[in-house]
Image 1 (cartoon, rainbow, N blue to C red):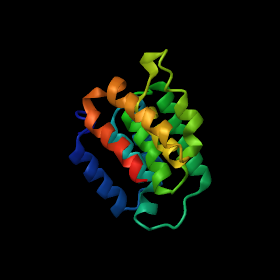
Image 2 (image 1 turned 180 degrees about the vertical axis):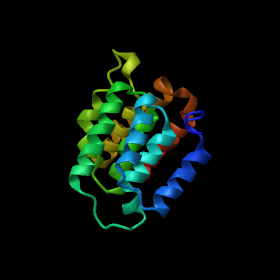
Image 3 (image 1 turned 90 degrees about the horizontal axis):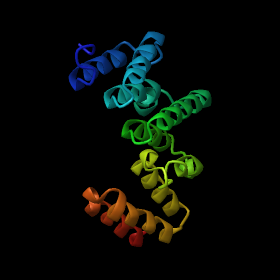
Image 4 (image 1 turned 90 degrees about the vertical axis):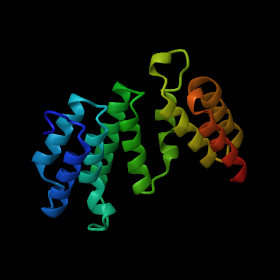
Length: 176
């Protein structure tokens, strides 16, 4: 069914239940399958979600207490590689952010990486997701003015469709 519709949410959910029921989280064939789906279409959010579940699901479900650092590093590098190929793809940015969030890692580590996708001279590689991440990083660095500037740029220039969202995010900075 995924060959016919590779983004079919119900089929991916069914597959996820099999992974959980039969403890297939580390099954090489399952990992290869999902990586192949991502390589075929790196914008396939369903495949990215499934990969996240395979790599971090046992931890999230509290079936394991830690995740091997080599796995974490490998997944971070994979996400960065995919972001570099398609900087405007939300799936790979969400995957990277998800890793940092679930493992409570400091996103400030991603500042240099995200900055390379914010150069307005090369508009085709400008990523709203990189700007959003930088705004969050500035907030963590207690640099509220820089964070506000980024949200204003998003609201007024880069993503005016979501102006209300960006204005809300900017207003939240004064609460911090």
